[in-house]
Length: 108
Length: 283
Image (tube, rainbow over the protein chains, first blue to last red):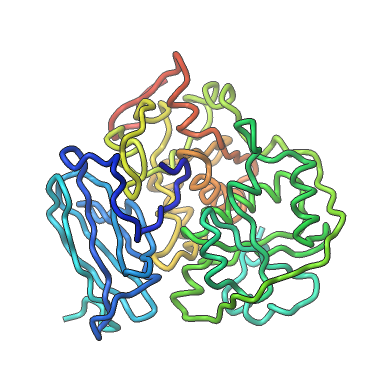
């Protein structure tokens, strides 16, 4: 358990001390337009009102992970390959999402 | 104080990488970020190993800070440009130290490591070696640092700004959402503290918002009383350094302190008042 506010290594396995019966984990990967995992992407967690909650940086496996609460969340990824936005309705346990970044962003 | 006195742009940084008397310093908790690639010529400071006392729960003293900067090859008359990860939290925290110990010329790289990476600017893994100096820090400036008794006395008297996320403020979460939630200290906030999450002061790319946007945020939206002194806090004093920077260095309010004990200290004190929920609460 880190005593700072910074993000722990996102490639590590879920710590054994995390109780999935109690925790709501939002995790997933960031990929680029070629489907390759993106290292060094900034993933931001926004709450149901669009308010910023937390941000992590993906590791070599393009992975991110947040500990939140059940409910509606928005995930926003920024990278040198472009951006992506994803909506998620989270429940207790692990909630997986894949974010595909592109220069087009979320324009239709 | 003007924005260019305390912030440099990534373009300015790129043009001044080799300028004599300008020292770039990356400040991170996770120094593997620095080791995987850093701005050319930048030295590193580790948030924990270099800036915290190894024994007492406190940060480095005047002598320790002098020794650290001497070892890093930083002179009293150098212009220090700080940058780091996490939207410059650690760089802003280090900036606060440089001010606490009286360094004349120190600036933040606007957007920090994030903006630099999103712009796909060059980084290097070259080892940086600077000649050691004889740095002499000044005595700690207590006008910039708040301690717990002062914070409790400020309830209902001064502006208290809680910069944690809304859920931490309300007591629904005990830690930021990227960390497990198993900590045991009490949840909530200091009564009468206004909730202005640090992130509202920054754009998505990590740069600081404009002074006009910041004034709108703190004064118009949150209700900061410009005639009063201000104390900012978060969980351990890093995110609040970011807000302290916005309030004192960018907006120019004179009496702004950072409470580095923050919620990990306050939320563990016996007998102090705590407010729960989304409202500031009363004295």
